[in-house]
Image 1 (cartoon, rainbow over the protein chains, first blue to last red):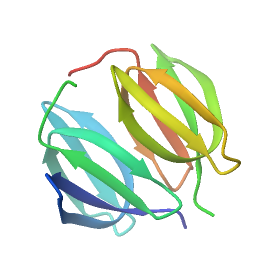
Image 2 (tube, rainbow over the protein chains, first blue to last red):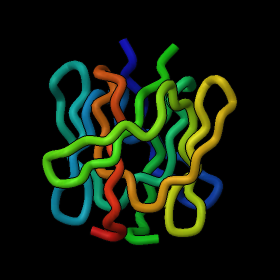
Image 3 (cartoon, chains in turn green, brown):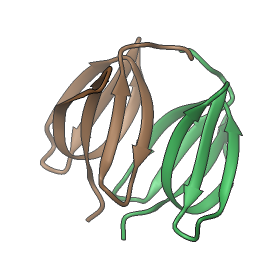
Length: 65
Length: 65
C-alpha cells in the first residue's frame, strides 16, 4: 500500500495532520483528506510538496504561490 | 516503492506528465518533479489532487484556488 503521512509545514516545523492518507481532493479553500481507514479530515491551505518514496505529503497554510 | 504517475488535468482529460515520480518541490509558478530514475521535469501550475493508493498525482494549470 502506498498511502502517505500528511504534514503541515510551518517554517522549519512539520506537524503531523493525518497518517495513512490515500486520497486528497480539493474543497473550498483547502483539501479533504481520506485515509485508508476511511477517516476524513479537512485541511485549509495548499499542497506544498511531495516526497512519495518517503511516504510524505506536505501542506502549507499559504494558498496561491 | 511508492512512487506515482503525474498527470495534468484538463477538464475531463488527463495527460501523463511523468512516470515513477518521487519528489515534487515548489518552484516559481509551478513544481519540479523528480522521478526514481533521477529525471527531472518542471510543471507549471498547482497540485490538484492525490490518489496515492492508485499511484496518481494530478496537476492543474490553475494556480491559487
